[in-house]
Length: 233
Image 1 (cartoon, rainbow, N blue to C red):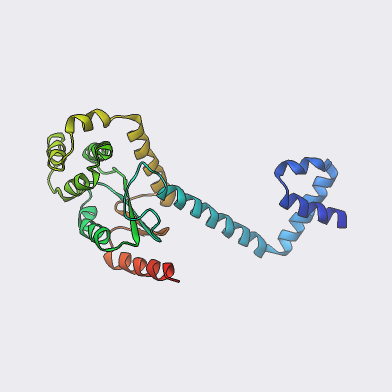
Image 2: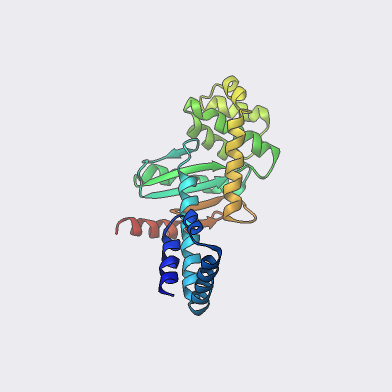
């Protein structure tokens, strides 16, 4: 029995291939020991599931905030990171614009990451592609604010006009809009949103990994205060 217990510990700590060093009977006996232990100590299993979920969430958060294709504003090493998934045709995203811009302007301890999530209409998709395509020109932030401030239809002509006003080379932008990398980034954003919630809607905020659905300014500011307090500990 002592040998089997040692083997159990070895299997937990060693790589999976190490299990092959035991014969079929030994592996069956080890599995029986594990099963009996977990049945008698179910809290261990719950702790393991919780630890796995936390690790999965942390890894997803790291991937969400580390994609260099996304536009971000604020220090790269800021202790607080706000992510916004948005749609240019979303009125609640329009309403949130002033709050987002104010945070970017006044907080040097916050980094904001913007992720296009065009889910409302074909106009949403075209505007998102145009915004991403403008990024290499260094005019994204101005163009983003112009698109987000627009209350009328985002027709192709209006998108181009807003781009010109923001200093974007429209011909260059249009050439880049259907680049597979642009489409891939939008698909990835959609995948992240679906991982976070079964029915993603915009805006969808995350503050240091904590999700806030919709533009609830009171809750956003509460979460920001909590993140600020945690960062100062």
